[in-house]
Length: 136
Length: 209
Length: 105
Image (cartoon, rainbow over all chains, first blue to last red; front, side):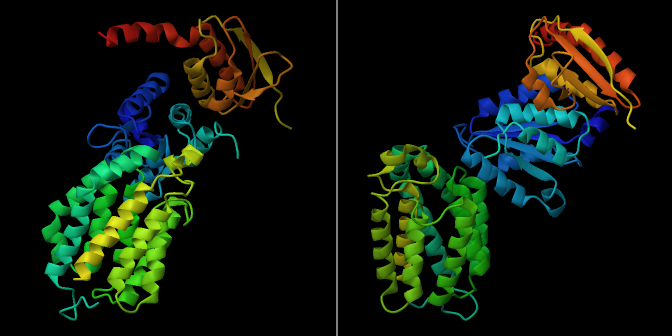
């Protein structure tokens, strides 16, 4: 069944300050990689302005959830810290299976989804995306 | 300064007044915090804090009814979920840690210890330290004053918070959005320092009588 | 002693060459094989891992360039046949274009 393949592949979450960027990045990932990888996105504050919202991030993690884990891509500072808070609020079983990736939000998500679509484990998916980021 | 009328929990009415005072201060000063944040940040500090503390106020009955540590933790969780931006994780962590460290009926020494732990947690969360033009530049001096204990604590803490916030004006930001402005961040009070000062002031006004 | 590499090549005839989505398709296909698979723009190399999305995206070969493949391992031959087929089918992009056309309606 095709959705079983989806569940087995690492899921991708995109967190941007901008709802448009988050949605657009998710669209690009789906267009380029297809539907074998769950992708969820969130962007903006509750008023629809620029910002990030922990509740929405938690919902996105849930939507993209896979037993193989979830890789999160963020843009600037607040997206990262609020995603960290969201991860800390997950239950014990899920918390260890969610990672934040240090990679550009669009390209990283695309690379991660590509890697995930081949069934790669979470650590491999994260590492593949982070190849885009030069070492300091 | 005595705050207990009962050995096991602080007076509910007092706890309620404390929470209300802080929340109303954040809500009432939202425009000012926005203005400060527009000067050197992304302009959302006022909006974010107002949203967070409106949610706190909406839950005031439950918050006032719980023992202080649980109440502080619930406030922290509420702030994490509702504030967002850069300050949600930071103020959320502050209150969550205060809640973990505070006893049911704190004396000044307990408050000092709890605040010290909360400051350390904020430093860790924000990867920052005093001297970088943040809320820590008010919290750390206030903590130092609290550690000294002694007479007239409420008035002294207020004065210390005010002086510390003013001292952020000539500082150069080294954290957050403001740090990208470099020297242009000089000459403006840090919005997080202002909100921290306001909180200290609100608490001291209630406790100082 | 490891098997030696077998090789094959195909010319990029799709308009965008080895651009983003074709890169993704190529790596996804390469990953479905157990064999070690590599790509180069000339037969002497340098060879890059065909299973690495980041490396393949950096190749940036335009239309008209020839992609050289080499593979070794149990299913190396099948891998090369599939990859050459993918390039010749222009990465199935034409299919997507017509699907998108109907989906957008």
